[in-house]
Length: 256
Image (cartoon, rainbow, N blue to C red; front, side, top):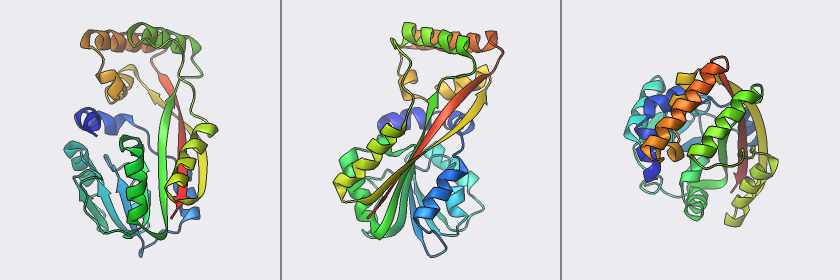
């Protein structure tokens, strides 16, 4: 989790402004799979700035969020201040103390990949009540499909400064199924997966703010990072001033 804390927490405001909201269909599918109401106990792993929490909190469940980043946790507290059914712990999952069989739903939103797989799945399984559900969902940024010249120019910059020779493959159904099937190795049953698609427009400055929340970008040597960011910003300006990110969101569900 150290990379997470250094990059995301230090860029908490940029993270909150630039990252997309989750589509409502994710929550509809979770609630169709597992009823959540005022009697339910729910845990979110890595609550961040609280972007994924509001639809869950609106069920009036007993909600616990854990978040290791101090700045992120502060933004989450502010965003969710109106809720009285909300508790937040500024801790990692590894540090969070709780009895087994405590939760009806445990979920993580673009956070679970930071936790070692074997530990994470086993800990979630122990925390869930019998019949409880683990929901893992995330988003994956894709290239601007409507501005091919811009996409090609940006890819050339990545080839030059990050040594990426090819476009990264778009996250697809096979990837989601692979993640869903992981839960089977840890005793979960009834696994399901779904995909969703949405877009978000960025100005040049907004897109650079987004990139500053990516650990692999911020770990670049400083001169290479500066040239990469300057090149991407100029490419967006030269191609109309807007870049559209095509997001794929995935949801994996599993039952104890």
